[in-house]
Image 1 (cartoon, rainbow, N blue to C red):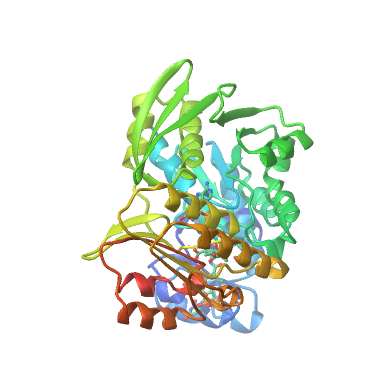
Image 2 (cartoon, rainbow, N blue to C red):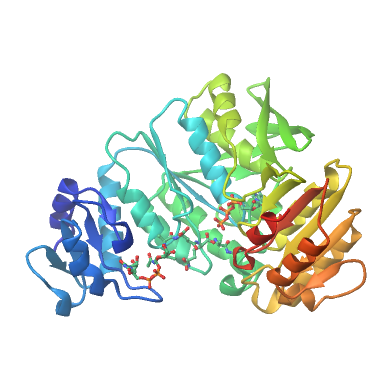
Length: 431
Ligand SMILES: CC(=O)N[C@H]1[C@@H](OP(=O)(O)OP(=O)(O)OC[C@H]2O[C@@H](n3ccc(=O)[nH]c3=O)[C@H](O)[C@@H]2O)O[C@H](CO)[C@@H](O)[C@@H]1O[C@H](C)C(=O)N[C@@H](C)C(=O)N[C@H](CCC(=O)N[C@@H](CCC[C@@H](N)C(=O)O)C(=O)O)C(=O)O
Ligand SMILES: Nc1ncnc2c1ncn2[C@@H]1O[C@H](COP(=O)(O)OP(=O)(O)OP(=O)(O)O)[C@@H](O)[C@H]1O
Ligand SMILES: C[C@@H](N)C(=O)N[C@H](C)C(=O)O
């Protein structure tokens, strides 16, 4: 079926489902293949449960007129998403980077929503499936779209850019994340730089953090011209200053020689750059300083991304949505700087670091051991290989859980950070 014809069907049924566990009546079911299942086998069930059509790529599962047979379901989904994107005459903001994509995306959404009907990626549906689903969820009432693009290997951002075709974009930062798939830090710069390549070619605007020598170098290599600079230095289009971090950030921002102050719900100086670029995008779309401040103050982080939670016994900084050497180092610096009577540090392994895993875990363990905190707990097989005096090391989260249950933590500010797969939320439940 031609993309135009499938698009006519989509316009009648503009809700996409990829999972029979979440079918909605009248949706278009796309039968994707994954690590565990071949979606084709669910096509018939999807139709029985109310899907209007099922898009499949295995002729063995054709059922009736409601099954649409294509060559490759994933590619069809991506082509349909790009076709839809091209019908939408609105600005698309693309976001990638090692750390802070989701936070930045939510901050930009919060700012732009003060003035415009804004649609942004839900959660972090940011990959080869998530980006098409994001685009196909944008309806005609939307005035600005924000698309988060994630990657763990080369050419992924290039491919997502071809689907989403952003008009403006930013790389939050480049750091030591997903080193295994990218092939080291230089590989991260190359892979994330694919967004700059796209915007250079299309003439799109780049928002660039001038404090990052890596991003400046990447922009210089590509001779980017259409750039809005933000940073903590004066020679930028937008300057930011950190006023307080106790534990929430208060910042000043200076633009057009005017100074504005905002109290935020975010902790950690690393969030300054996330906030600044949201202000920069707000300025670009002509929001007033009051509108921008309203949007920034309204954003409260969730989903264990530097989320501050008070329990009966402790104050927790829940930061176990993900972890890599760059975000770990930033979290440790922040923990060192905040004032608290008693501090407990709990770190879990960082995943997807490949050959650099041992060295990176050792470097973070050494940094942690130097911190002036009351108790240090390092968890996971990789940290365990760095076992030394000065901290408690456990091979698994369950072993650490037993220890914390028998020797409880009370009256402390506790930083808990590690990769998603470490399931550190189990510890938060007993703290
Ligand atoms: C393909 C798919 O969508 N899978 C989702 C599914 O997984 P499950 O294990 O159940 O099965 P399969 O994948 O094998 O299933 C194939 C299809 O069959 C459907 N199905 C299955 C059972 C059933 O009873 N009925 C069915 O219809 C099934 O839905 C499939 O369509 O369910 C899981 C639980 O809900 C989902 O987690 C799984 O989703 C996968 C992981 C996915 O890619 N989802 C995207 C929409 C997405 O954007 N997910 C984001 C996470 C993105 C991410 O990790 N980003 C990285 C960077 C990108 C790296 C990239 N190279 C990559 O590999 O992804 C980052 O660091 O940010 C999210 O969920 O938050
Ligand atoms: N600018 C930053 N610099 C360093 N670390 C950051 C920055 N912003 C956020 N982080 C860290 O990264 C964690 C995850 O934040 P966020 O979800 O916004 O990142 P992400 O890039 O979207 O991650 P993912 O790709 O896994 O979705 C935060 O809880 C915090 O520890
Ligand atoms: C959760 C996923 N987006 C991610 O960032 N994974 C890394 C490896 C992590 O969990 O730290």
